[in-house]
Length: 305
Image (tube, rainbow, N blue to C red):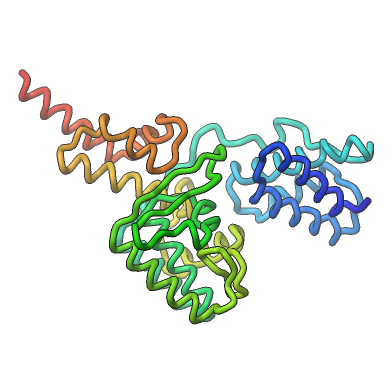
């Protein structure tokens, strides 16, 4: 049995137990291609490590995640082929601390969208701009946005249905009217430029669903093209659009004098956080929000005293 056939069996078994494995399936297929190109008919720790650490500038957490996917597949293969090398635990450990988030300004988001609009392929330009706009306006995970089906986007009610999100949770996400209007324009132009598009709401130039890795590549090329400042410990990533959304909401609540602690659970639900601590992290990870909280605390203390 070939490695590719073994991968199909492995994914089928995992999915029978309720695992979606959309990202893992796509990446492991790339890993098998990597092995095939090198003439390898079984997995070795060295080849697994070489694949997991490419590209060389990717973050430690991403390397660790890639190797973890291979580790699970290798364990399965080892049951049938003792030559298989299983990467040991502790090899390429995750960073102990979360990466410092990059907070996009409104002008920077507009620059990224303008850069996407200028992509030479009209179809890719259309879809890339729309995805960036939705991520910035809604705080969705990029995987949630790319997984949207046409039926999940209710432009009449202005609501998205997020299905099989993290931990297989589903939720409804209401959108601002301006976001609804932009998605309506996108859907109309998509049907004109990509008439054979499939069920996915965001269509690639071929009409198929946009792959996460392809969008990641496009996005980070745009980050470079528009000249965003990139610091060694704070790189601008796709996920930081989600972080920026949360920070913008929390900042607005602070400015409005709202009871942030009381409103945080609603933000947790909106963003699909299973643990409210994940939402509270946005407070502790953002110096501007900590400063605002201290100012409000000092003002309250002065009034009471």
